[in-house]
Length: 634
Image 1 (spheres, helix red, strand yellow):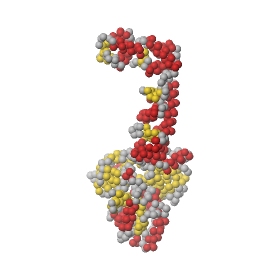
Image 2 (cartoon, rainbow, N blue to C red; image 1 turned 90 degrees about the vertical axis):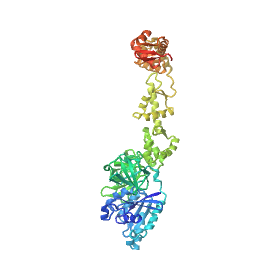
Image 3 (tube, rainbow, N blue to C red; image 1 turned 60 degrees about the vertical axis):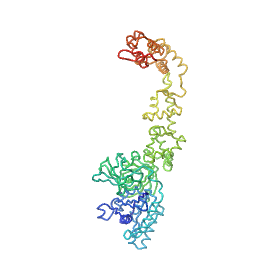
Image 4 (cartoon, one colour; image 1 turned 45 degrees about the vertical axis):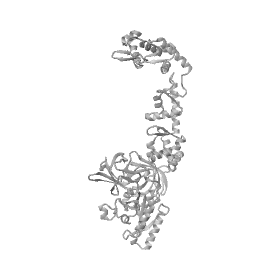
């Protein structure tokens, strides 16, 4: 079944609610005060099914005091039913409501000239002409205009046919292709069931028992029961009025302006980058001005920061940053309306370009302006590439990118495929993947090369540097998994090679010839010492070199396996230790203790214990109580 969500708009007492009742048979005024006063105060709802299309109506108040309520209901509609009474023609709230639906970016609508039973034919034509003047150049310029009377029924069928015609026209995109988003416009308690919220489902689907989160708080809740137009359903679809009975939240924590969405599907932010259009009769706008910000059902305070000029004159269009009083869940393409705080007046509206921008710092230069142009007018691929470049060496998490762009992971992959193929960005495999620009990765590679050579040069006999040390120098403070992913990318680029826990410059297989000659002399000193090894200081004196140089080359010989470093810091020639292992294996007795081992090899206890621990570790012996069992197989 096709679904179509229509919102009314128009001046107070022009017959919006009566017209909705004539079309659907449902009185959208639900409050006792509305019945008593005969005016709509808050949002009302009605629905009908016509020729296989479920049409939902959001009936909004027309009084200027209740424009904020009108905005709460207008945010999620797909088309507008602009209502103008033929006996009064265009009035102040007609104009303001029309400005609002234009600011909300609507592309479809129908115009109803109501109360024709109370207007002379000449007045009907005057009203028709006034409406044509009002809508000229707008999305309603060529919209169907139907004269009707809710009281007599004249023209109601024609109006219904016009709404159906618009409902059958193709929207720019299918709202069900995006993640579910339900802006909450009402919250109340039903005895025996608990808290219930209602709203117009602007995208996606919601299912019974589905887990969702309340934004911006990110509180996880479960949908216990789901109703669409008063009927219990398993699934609700975009374009429908939905009631959701929630589990996991109290009524006092629910209010108009919250949003229900799948966990992690949308970003929340107190700062937005946007294109703002001021109305021709709006006052000038300056950086720092406070305004009322309306986005779907939410109403927040905001401060405006103009990015390209000190002041914005009436009728102008400019890019701005909006700093909000509290966080809002938005994606690129979302529309909003701004109103002046005092006197209260709708002054403009616009479109979100980036829901998570970096703070603006001064006027943008030419390069920044070019980036803003690409962000505003570019393709999804270009926007993603800009955000990845902006993340610099931190990289951009795949899930966060998809949230920021307001797209599914599959759409993100499709958009990034050509940029990845061109190697302007790189996907580093994690869970989830993270992306980094070529410029950022090249910068890391250059720094890694410099730091690695510096570390090697600073340590005599070093073939490389500890991987952890290098990564800490190159990416200080990076989380370990990201550092490992960067390391793998550097290896694939040929910046370094890995050998165990060491990172080495490519081609670095051995030390320079003079150092190799000196290392052989050091090894000879240890071989001569046998099981009475010299200290590093004694070796340095023997070869007549600085102790730091000798320490570096001892480390080199240990890595090469020529020397062994035993527990406790003892250093022996491998040949001497291998001879001990061979002699122990050749003993006829099944085991020996420490005393026997000391006597057999003429050792002090200080060396005997570390040497036995080495024999245990290399499976020559196995400790059993106070003795070592001799293992015969090497």
